[in-house]
Amino acid sequence: MLVMQVAKHSPESCPEYTDKYKAVTLKWFETAEASCAKFGIKMVGFWTDHPTHTVYMLFEAPTMEAMMGLAMTPETMAMMSFQRIKTFPVMDFKQTWDMIKHSK
Image (cartoon, rainbow, N blue to C red):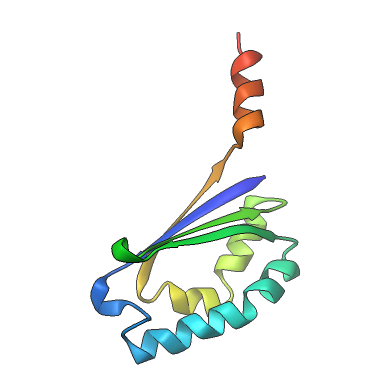
C-alpha cells in the first residue's frame, strides 16, 4: 500500500534556522532508511516545499500497523515535537484508473 505523509512546521521551528530542531531533523535523516527497513517500509519519495515549511513523503508499506511502528520510533516521535504530521493511504494513477473503470 502507498502511504503519504505531509509534515508541516512553523517558520519559527524550521530546522534550517533552529539548532534544536536541526539536530532532531538530522538524526531522523540519518536513521530513516534503517527505521523504514525495520518495519518493511520503503520510502518512495521525499519532497520539501521550503517556502511553506511543508514536507511530503511517500512510502510503500505492508500495512498501516507498520506505519504506526515507524511513527513510534524515537526519531519520528522527536520530529512530531515541532510539526504536525498527517498520514493517509493513497492510490497511484493506475490503481485509481482501475478502481473507476471497474466500479459499478
